[in-house]
Length: 210
Image (tube, rainbow, N blue to C red; front, top):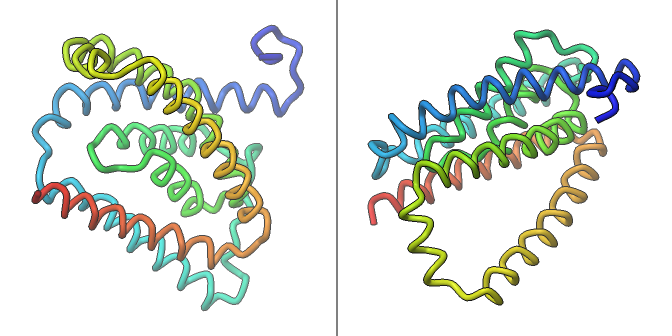
């Protein structure tokens, strides 16, 4: 916000550039996927992208372990080039595919790019804010009938309870992940993320078959 009014420091300006570029790329790719691809991708194919991502992450964790610390991510926000930010935006936009985790895709991409775990999580969480606002707007515009029927079937107390639970779990999860990311146990973190991605992919395949 400070950078928007010309009062921010260098880090604020870099962060603003990151959010603008990543959000723009996400918007273009996400809308295309949502309108053209997502409706036709069904069944077992839903989990394939996450399984591939999980395997890549586990492979990266093995590489970090074998390198004995020489392969540790060291890049931060100030080290990001425009092409890096575009790739992060692409990873976030790909989350428009059914079964693909936005946070998993963005954090994993940044870890593979050599960005420090704590910075990867922080940037992923920040990028979520404009992306979620845009995704909500697009969903409302393009799927008003479906959303209306769902809302009509819910009561106000149930909606408020869902929002409250989501906020609480979200805050706890973010604090926990940032604490783990700052512990420097990057290999363990990468293995866990990879395992979760594979589990998510297998679950999507199972549910898709059902």
